[in-house]
Image (tube, rainbow, N blue to C red; front, side, top):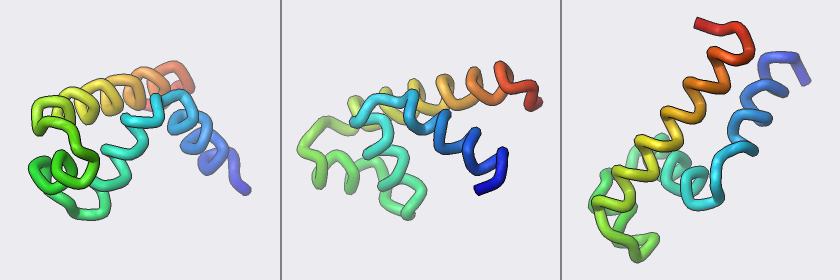
Length: 67
């Protein structure tokens, strides 16, 4: 496993379980309403989890010296 792969896995491990779920569904091509239905949460909760996960991943990248 490369250093970059380890860094990505470390960043994902810092997310909450719900944030990882939402990110996975979103990057698999599902829409916010579809994710909300499958996970039985509101669309607002999906958007909030996406926002928080992206913010945390960005902070991790900056901390690791990435731009």
